[in-house]
Image (cartoon, rainbow, N blue to C red; front, top):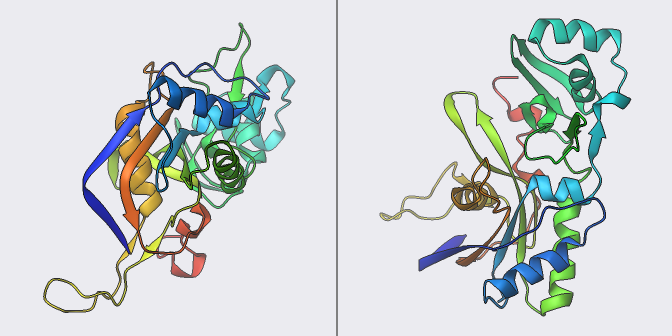
Length: 257
């Protein structure tokens, strides 16, 4: 189970630079923590915006290099989007879930159901070119690699969450969602635990990493805030670690597919 202390602290690491391909995220995070006057402690959780991870991993694509297929051109006409962007969405996806004017919902190759396969063009210094940023190739692996390197650099056992903004099918507005996680339980199963009156919980599973991502988003912001890395301190849990992939609902449990 997860338990929170009486106080949770969120610290946006200040002065975090724009990230380029090949940048050492571990070094940048450690330097950001030093600027904040923070030393890593066991149980800290480092939350990173997906964009900085994707940029460091070289997931930028110049749209001038993309040749749309006939399928992409047809779909682009339906959704009123750039055919080159739609081509990238199709390459990153297993299937199209919904297509409407200005809306393209797909099942990403990672299993995520999301708009435009998570491909974004905001907050990118493109130097006059039209660029698109793809999700990390394997966000859970990216989170695990950073977790291991932060342990080597600090000696502290920390969790890592990679955060992206998702819309929700029945509610307006986006919220932070974990697409990668390491060193913590992304999903916590509380079934069988007693409630206040001793009744066993029947269906309760906690999207632990999603809650962490949403909390960090309050500081990160979606626009020009320039705070892509947030340290969360004071959260404790008693459950084994599992990756963000554990949050994906299997097709056999999906009542709306």
